[in-house]
Image (cartoon, rainbow, N blue to C red):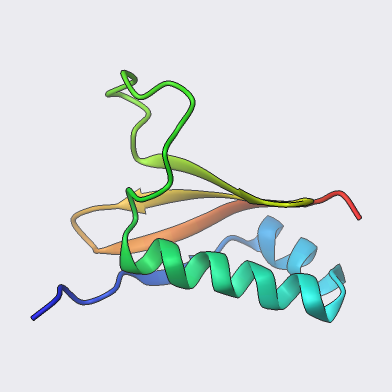
Length: 86
């Protein structure tokens, strides 16, 4: 049996950005977050030796990037920022 996916929360700042995105970009954000919830550490970071910052992850797909924090004890992700270069 695979582990349960992490829950996803969106910060107020990220929610404002999400509300302003075109529908296809919103769909991509949720696709990214679904992948992240299933494997929070699946997105490789630029500096893999950064033990202090390993719980803050950055996932990018094309013109879209999502920064999220992994809350291990609560098994949840909090979206900190969304950037759309569209």
